[in-house]
Image (cartoon, rainbow, N blue to C red):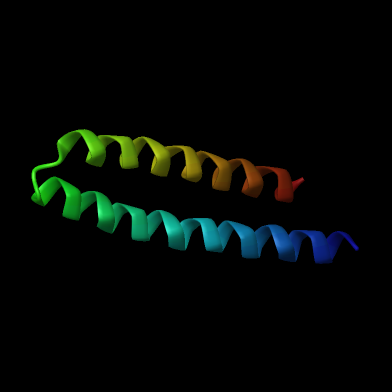
Length: 62
């Protein structure tokens, strides 16, 4: 059961990281379009997602 939980946490972390990468691409596009405020807002959300991914990795490690 613990192995299954770690597997699901790992899959969730990978999904979060993929979405964070996509959001960073969106952030770059927004910045290039001159929308700094929205770009910064997206960056803050990406940082929060990555914090969650790190917390999940820590929780999974024991």
